[in-house]
Length: 329
Image (cartoon, rainbow, N blue to C red):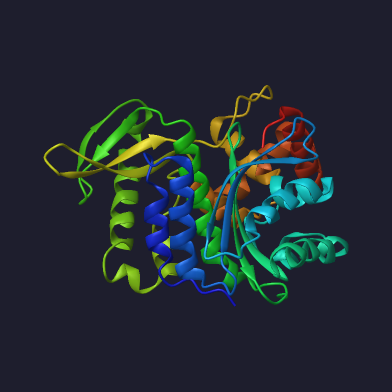
């Protein structure tokens, strides 16, 4: 089963916003592999969906301690992934797990066969960082033996890592202006726009983030990742920034996952709707957006009323259709 010790170091690394894409991906694969310890190495790649959202197009990849034919595996995945796998693994569904955790059961043998034929692996534990209007990221840990469906407690720290990977890739794709700047102890230096009224929430998030990075916080990756989340109030990501004199600040960048929406949803409702369309549970949505589970539940209820649907299943189906028309992965 996957480990997670040392995962916080990988989280810190994903927020390198200046490294070239392939070098960044290689470093992410290397750091994540040290925590997971797969039997056959690690493969990472960027991908986008075609306009019809029935195929994926892969671009740029990195291999860490992987088999010789890892590049051939990338090309085979691009060529052979059927539309149902594209929809259920690449565009929505679990953000972390083995083939048994995210691929429909009838297609699991096909998925394992592709890995086995190309690199001698029978399974892969994947991390999906799905980003709208930019390249998404997949990191796959290759395993010699097929694995059963995972328990949620095993997946939890890796889902949290995937949330950070997603937030970081959005920032790397489009980095906006700094909205607030804090010292490491949480003192506000300056803020603009919406960050002014949210300074108390941001200050608390800075303190939790810094606690997670202490020696004591690093004793448990799971506890550290509970403290440090990819988004604050569904809107901001926190990143280290160094001045010319070497002083470190924590800066807040706007990093909402939502897109322009003709249904007149608020930015927070858009963000929840986007993740809900991908089949995520309220608790997982809450972690990705830095919101409480109860808050997510209230937003889901509002979405049902606004969109005039009776059940959560109908809401998810409607939002998934809307995201498909939007045409971005």
